[in-house]
Structure formats: C-alpha cells, structure tokens
Amino acid sequence: MNQRLKDLYTHVSVHATADREHEAAIELLLLVMMADHHISTDEVDEIRHISDDSGWETDTFSFDQYIGPASARVRTALADHEVEALLDDIDGRVASTVLRAALFSAARDVAGVDHEVDADEESLLGQIAARFD
Image (tube, rainbow, N blue to C red):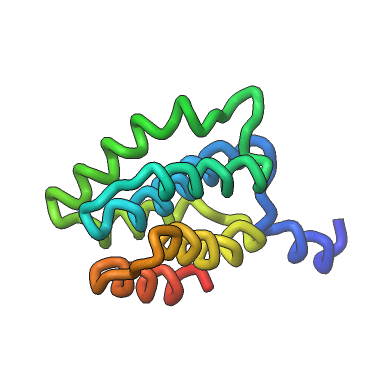
C-alpha cells in the first residue's frame, strides 16, 4: 500500500477496534453527564441519541448493554478522584480521527442538554477539548 493511503487510514476505526472506541466514547459522555453529580433522563437520552445517530449500534455493541458497566466505571473514577486516569484510558482507546473530532461536540451537547453547564462540567469540557478537539 502506498504511504499516502497508509497515512490516511492509520487512524480510521476498523471493525475490530470500533467496539472499544464506542465503549470509550460512551464512558466519556457518561463522565460529562456525571461530572455535576446530577443525572437526568434528558442527558441519558442525549447520549443514546448520539450513539444511534453515529451508527455505533451493531451486532457486537449495544448502548443499552454497555451503559451499566460504563456507568460503574465512571462512578468509580469520580469517587476515587481518578478522572485523569480514566481520560487517559479513553484517549488511548480512541484512534479514529473522525470519532476524536466528534467527541468534544458530543460532550458539549450532553453537558448543555439540561441548559446548565456548571463549573465541574466546564472544567471537564476544557480537558476534553485539549485532548480531542
């Protein structure tokens, strides 16, 4: 394969890594939702809507099946003050440049769905922008 094509496809998600990336994206969006320690059905619905619109639902990945484990992982990171470590892990799992470019916008949508962005959410959005925007 010529180098130009190889460079173009280096960071494109392939089927084998797509589930890991979608899991990471769900965790990131749940982290934004939980950052203000308030969970609303509107925020969960927004994350589900993003997942549906992005085509993440497949035979091997389901938002409804992954929301439980992802929520537990995010709650643990928040309780243990390990948000930075979780962000590092999420960052390492998302190789697709297309997904990386979309994550900040999606995170901002989740934070703003309740029409209030508090200081904790604003700080987290800054960290996400620095990593993914």
